[in-house]
Image (cartoon, rainbow, N blue to C red; front, side):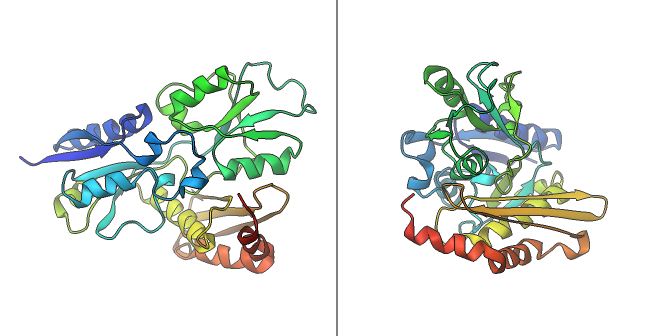
Length: 306
């Protein structure tokens, strides 16, 4: 095996952790691999809220270009950053076993949340997290927070906020989860949160065969259901959409929701089917949600300035 698989990755600590994890797997399986560092738009613009940048593909476009131009052979992404419709010529090579899908609150100090009745200032750039937080705590204020996980953790200490919301997996993977972090068990995650996807060029049999050796089928199924739900509801606008599918035995349980950006409106659906019947679960759940009040929330985004 003389070919060296060039792994494209962003330069953040978390992105490098993910890319090195894939490199280690490939090396263990007898393949040669090396990292190629590439900057993304999401790394260079740290002030504009993600929903104003268009969100979809903001962290993947530069890697897509490098992949299609032949500068790299594969790219490693947090799957929640990957558009539901991947660029033409790029295909899924492998999905790694999922880590925690949960969101966590990182308080400024361990004592920041002693009074549950007090109005708090919470930081996040995610309109999904913002909407769910305001749905539960309508009197709180949300501030924008951008940057890699290290930068965001630092900003929590530098600003007059009570805390900020993070993906548990991101902090845990690089050993930065604070001991006083609070798991938000009530907050439904972003579709595919906690999952890592590896992509390659269509028709690259060498990389596809390498990926087949570490592809996790259950994670791939669950994240596909969640992403199908997201794609069916997107409507071309930035919307607070959440989804989670889990496999227990031969059963798949799915929960998805959509909220208005201010958190005042919310529609949620839960369905359970056998794995053999789960192929179209994301689409069918989205259709049912739209027919039971979700459509009204979705249509409201055309009249709302985010």
